[in-house]
Amino acid sequence: MTTAAIDPELLKRGGLALDVDGPRATITLARPEVLNAQTPLTWEALRAIGESLPPEVRVVVVRGAGRAFSAGLDRRFFAAPEVDGQPGITGLAALSDEEADTTIAAFQMGFSWLREPARLTVAAVQGHAIGAGFQLALACDLRIVADDVQFCMAETGLGIVPDLGGTYPLVHAVGYARAVDICLSGRRVGADEAVAIGLALRAVPAAELDAAVDASVASLVAAPPKAAAETLGLLAGVAEGTDPAAALAAERAAQLRRIRSLAAGEG
Image 1 (cartoon, rainbow, N blue to C red):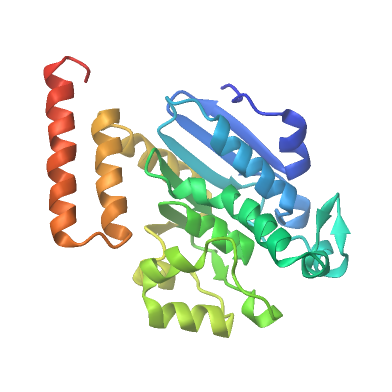
Image 2: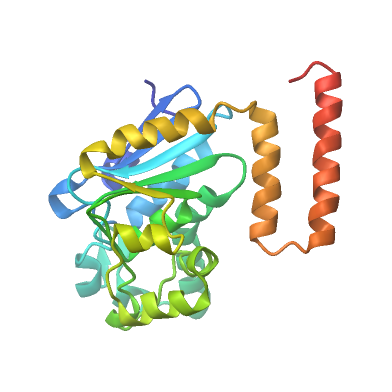
């Protein structure tokens, strides 16, 4: 395995590990002693990973070390205006509207690239996936979960809102009514319910999570890369609300690109 061209110190400070093995990259939240709690440096490191992955990477797996995927935002950021040179909740409140908007937009970029159709992204989720942890899992195309998973959107109950891009994929995954229930109640969503409502692709025993993800990744990268990328683009367009006529037009254009590429011997 190799590491993509990214500052190893940023990865360390962000609490992440990165491995790239051919068409697969694995991002590991690597602070198990605090249940992989996230900080703004985590999001900065995630953004840097998205910008540095080599083009041959076709699938990205996001996982957490230890017994939890991620328990959400590091609690220090709720209590102090600044931690590790990054603004906390009260620090954001003291910024101007423009500065705060720019700062939060930069945080969001650590998550948003995971939904780009250039590559498939899979969250392997065990234990707690709370707040920012839930939103990180939601940023991925697919979620495969352990039978001990506990999803929770805790932000609203804390007096804030989900602001790392989680509302859009949550509504698309489970529908508006269920999203309202999950966000406003702050209740836990376990494995069986997550699969039943479309939040997770499948649930497996915790001891089998890594093997299940490996098997899924192997099947998902079996398709020819360019055809897979075009198909992901088509599906993403539909998910974002492309109307039927536009979807048909996009299919025609994508197919023509593929036929011409194949005719030219480009694969």
